[in-house]
Length: 92
Image (cartoon, rainbow, N blue to C red; front, side):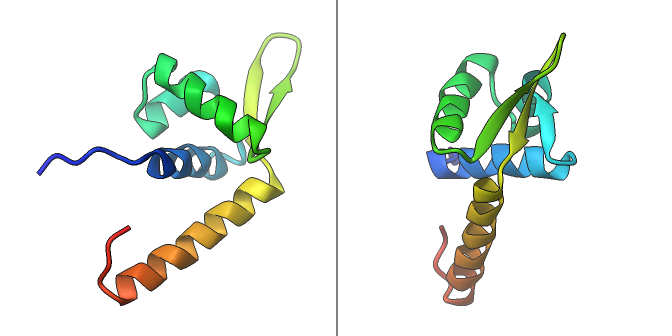
């Protein structure tokens, strides 16, 4: 069965990708790790930046996206919710 990811699942995939890569990634690497196209990533990045789950870090040549403390806390709470849902046999 081929099921699509929800927006929340995509947000979590992006945040986890960044978190697992020492807390910061370039946009292209997020595309690969979160399995998105560049155009779709823009929409999700805009949301995550506006909610302050990610911040944009620029140096002279590159732009990185770094997870914030708020983004890390969100992932922690999502993990707790996932554990509860699995304990009761209710998929998220």
